[in-house]
Structure formats: C-alpha cells, structure tokens
Length: 353
Image (spheres, rainbow, N blue to C red):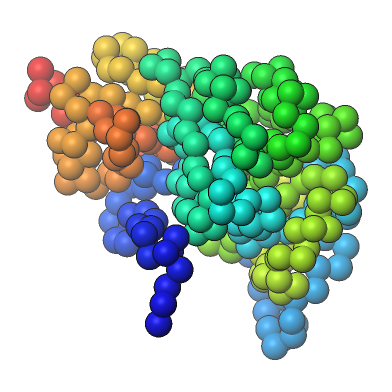
C-alpha cells in the first residue's frame, strides 16, 4: 500500500495515558476535573441505558437549542463534535490545502500541528516570550498570503496565559480572509470569551469542550461556535453519527444541574489555586500561575528528577517538551490532595537544598 507522504512523515501523538490508575496515583498530570460529574449525570445515563436504545442511531433532538441557551447563540450557530479534537479536525480540513498554512503561538495544544500535518499544509509557529505573554506582533508578522487560519488558544495550554481580547479583535479586523480560531476549552475557569464579537466578525470561530469543567472527557463532546454559513460547511465533513448519545445525555444533565460543577470551579480557582501559589512563593519555587486550572512549575534542578520523585511517591505530574523541558505541569485538585502534593514536593525541595 502507498501511504500519503504527509502521513508517512508524521509522528504519532501519544499522550502518556497508560497506567494512570486513580487508585494508585494522585492524578495531577492531565487537565481533568478532580471529581466525577454530579450524581444527576449518572442517573441520566442509567435511565438512558434502561430505556434500551443502544441499538438506535443517535439523534440529538433539542440539545443544540439547550446548549445555545447556555452559550448565548442560536442552534444553527453550533456544531457538536466528538471532543474538541474533532472540532479542530473539521475546521482545519475545511480551510487548509497543501501549500496553505496555519499560524499559531507556540508552544500550544499538540493537536493543531498534528491535524495540519495530516492535511499536508504548513504549520507556522510564533514563539511565546519568556514571560508567556501572547506574542501578538510575532503572530501578525507570521501571517502571509497563504495563511488560511490563525489560532488563538485562550487561555493557552500549556502556558496558561491569555491573549487580550483587544488583540483577538485586532486580528479579526486585520485579516478578514483568515479564520481566527479561538480555542476556549477553559472558558468556564476564566469567564473570558470573544463570543460577543461573533455577529461583527464572520471570520471568528470558537471552539469549546465538555472535557474540562464539565468533567466528562471519557464521553468526548465538544462544540464549534461560528456563523451559520460556516457551520453548514462543517456539516459536510462531520459525520451525522459522530457524537454518541451517552455524551448528549450526560451533557444535557450537566446543563440542567450546573451548580455542582460551578461550585467545583469556584473551589479550584478561588481556594486551591491561591493556596498553591502561596506555597510556591513561600518556598521560593519558580512557577507560572496562568489563568486556568493548571500551572507550570520550574524546579531549581529541572523537571526530570522532580517528576520521577513525585511518581515514586504516588503523584503524577506532566513533564513538558522543549522549550518547556525545565518545567512540569500540574492540574488543580481538591485542597486535601493539594496539601499532599505540597508536603511531598516540599520534602523533595529540602532534600535537594
């Protein structure tokens, strides 16, 4: 068989998912919710199974109208996707050809480059500076006549920093022929969105997910928000059955019972994160707080030894690739779990000192 050269020349994106047993480790390595969704979600899923409809193809009914009420847009401005990864896939496949390019601040979420590579288009990265402020001028200067998509991850993963909304709007205004794709996966943690610009700028595309604050990454549900005309183009690519009914049932329950996940978000951002920040400051440990439910930590002796020590003590954190190889990333957990991390890491630092 002859594999396309674009695919043959790619690597496999394989995040370290194997062996992540929550009964064995404190999981601080992926940007997941520290708690499962509320009982209302389990009851809704159980009811769905009892109804005996697993043999029927999925049909989404009024869910897009319900989601639209939460988001503040019409159902026609929404596209449901099998996780936000599929959203990235359908958007980029609709916009890019070989010879065209995507511009993005780097480092960023790996799936953007992975998808660009599968298409055989060009990936242009504008590096973040040392303070991780959004490199607006570098992004602007990287755009050229072959650019079709400009990506803004807001807040960015893994740096945790955001682009000011004025800069997002400036990109929309300056490059009307490019899609400006704003990834708002962590919107529920920051409250920052550019959706109020949707009616003014037809080139704005927003991507969100139910994997973070809503705590159902195993069910794979994301959504795209854009002008109706663009959504109709994406519907030509996304399959009619790509989103499973279990995801829809769970998401509907979460929208109908928002208080538990909203309270968890408040706890993580208003109690846990300040506690961690104070710990790092008091112990003179370099860190980058960011604006979402995760942060980067830079131990004095680099990340490798710290990551291994924490794993030996039953705590998984995420080592970073270049140019962040001196850092590891941690996800917010409950106060009790955070205290365990702080105790173990403080002992590690004292041993090194």
